[in-house]
Image 1 (spheres, rainbow, N blue to C red):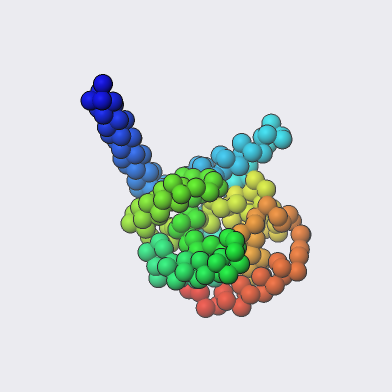
Image 2: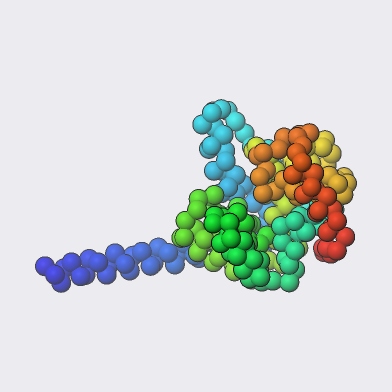
Length: 232
């Protein structure tokens, strides 16, 4: 009986390892595909749509993919300045940023800062959800490595700007520019771009024309940093 139980246990473990390996191959295949082709939707978009439809069954998300050349360089610089100043220097993980975030969280006694890079955020948006769990962070790290191996920094930034949320159910730079300012992503002025970048951490908090003292301060800070950022 013990031998049978032992075999069952190892059989279960082996099946779990095989399933996990196949899952990683699937992630890798998707990342390779998206290095050349644009995703129609992401795991985070689908999750948000389910949430929206709990209150409004007919709800839809607003999203439209635009190529890198049709996104204002001001927005590219603003988002890098705001979210990941070392984006073009690291390989997916900003260890200095992670250390600083950890020290700040320890001082505050709670999680008030994160050290996620643009690549890590892209990995989460493409494949995962907002769930906070150890396994999710581990999987996010694995996907981040895949993205950095298979995509250029330009492609990573292009995808990121096209899939992140910028309003309640509003995804991507084109939809965000039209939703908040009534212009295309290519027409965004520096201050408009900085304001959009300031909204990234809490995108559903701000509607068109919404303003707060924090948003004004954060926008001014990003504006001051943008000129130092160079993007492809």
